[in-house]
Image (cartoon, rainbow, N blue to C red):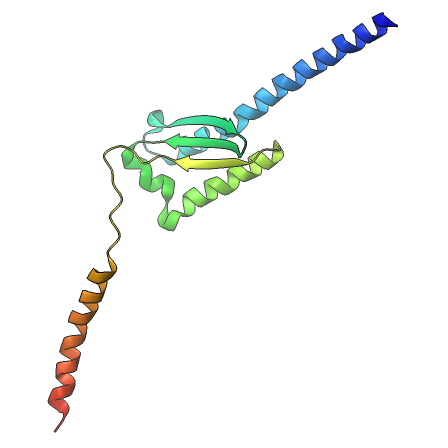
Length: 140
């Protein structure tokens, strides 16, 4: 009876080790998919780097590219980045994981600061004055 339990334990350990190996292979698939896809999109494929971290929220893939290639990764109105995120969700769904993508902004680049509301209102006021003057000239 004891030998039967030992055989079951050995068999279970071998199965669990196979499952662990398969999970590791699955885990690398999403990162490889992202890296290969991005390398085809950019002009400097040697500067593409991806990192993978797993936490309670799921898998986070972080993408670093050359500053000159950021426009190609983000795309017009963010469409390329949105498509990459959608494809990664599909790859994650196949592996029973939630995959998110973070695109790191390269050092030395900055997003333009959003215009303040006051500046917008001042521009609108300046644009309205010539029209008001024209209306006053028409009055008799």
